[in-house]
Length: 174
Image 1 (cartoon, one colour):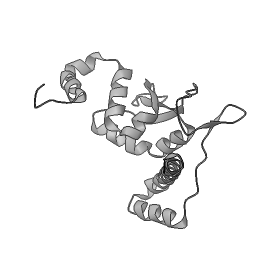
Image 2 (tube, one colour):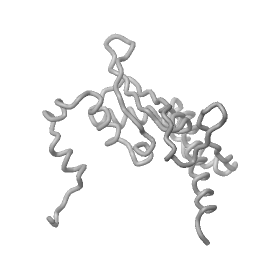
Image 3 (cartoon, one colour):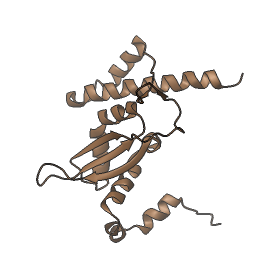
Image 4 (cartoon, one colour):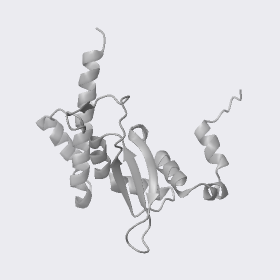
């Protein structure tokens, strides 16, 4: 072992110079950019990435991302401008991002239940007035065009965190 070991990600990134990146498919490059630009939560809930043509002539293509739960589709859609900016800063050029629910059943995903018609439903707790005010305070400095979407995304994120913390307390041994 070398004392100056590097991560597998760093090693692969070094091997994929500009010439190497040109040899990979458009979908592979999109997947690489999506995973590199985003964090653990996005990677954990992403089940596929692809590129589709824009319906507007001459426009950049659209990035398609399959997500595992309906609530994360809503959450990620609210933040799509942020994701576009991150990917753009890494050299990706997409006119939009479409988040789609992966309809294949995956029974290994915790926190979801099936209703009678086969749709995935995730019950989320309500936020307190103080929690909503905290979120409002955090988004108040954002541009007006982003404020409502980011507020909705943060509310969903707080609700999910609240649910996960409640479930962890229920299942942890005492």
